[in-house]
Image (cartoon, rainbow, N blue to C red; front, side):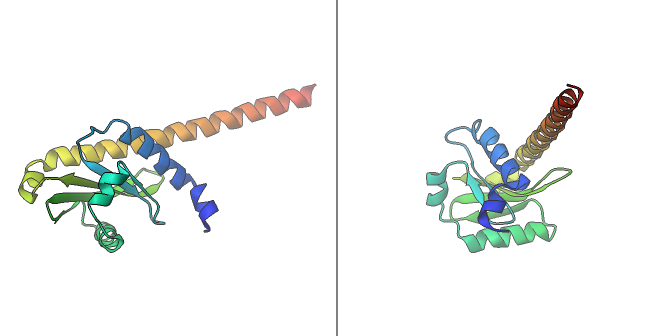
Length: 156
């Protein structure tokens, strides 16, 4: 798949829509969120803050491999930042991965708040499912309108 095809793929578009909806409601000093797909495209909630974390591509690949092996969520630490990563999927699509970077969180703070973090991960999955269902409904509606307009043209 070339770059043009992957950018127009339903998975890319879905991740783009998820990122737009979720990043809009993140608090300014809150977690840094990264959505990444299987092809390596990524959407950080705050590019500048994410860059400051200095997370290497190799580290991200290792996180994703652990998730693919069934370890989920993956919780780890980089310097003074906790990282929580999980799969982002709907019933129809494997969107890729979601990575929460929690600056100034030690591993103990992260573990204490794990229930809240897992709730956020569940909410992200719910948002992804709702966006996907909305997209499917839109497609069905457009097909219906096309069929109606074609039958009107044929009857005239």
